[in-house]
Image 1 (cartoon, one colour):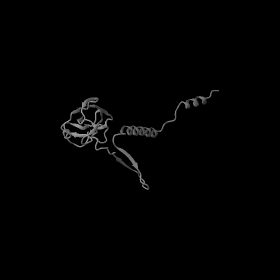
Image 2: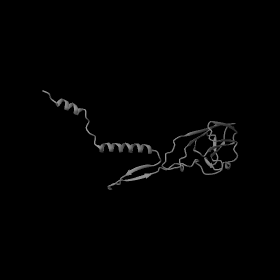
Image 3: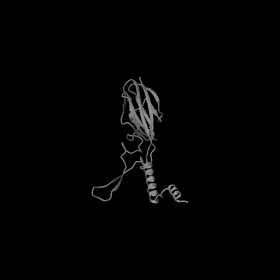
Image 4: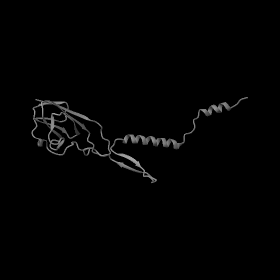
Length: 188
């Protein structure tokens, strides 16, 4: 006698159970949400869902974190001013060219003028480089952030600055890079 049972059992083992369409849709929406959240992370805004005790529906609030030292579109940390207000410099570094060096005498005024196409911060200044006035003054005529230093002792002075991108559109992605501009002065 011939039986069809073994063939039916074998045929059933090759078919997977049908996946409900709702499960596929939920998985796709979850994946899209995760990708969107990853792409938007770091764009300057954050959201939080907050539920008050005893209230049925949570509320969503969106906040923009404060930017230290003012708005991120300001290239210079100091006020608007003039490079000449500190006096006549004996040595000027300009244009953001890194690894430049020069020579000065004790008491000389040394100026660093960095282009306003980036946001600049003083990273390091040797102890014998005394800052004159307020650092990071924005000189509109020079289109530069200006730091003035007075050489107070003989030896070597290192001045290092970090330049980052100007981000002028809240919530828009901002390039994340840092540019080092470092200067060495031999004081005699």
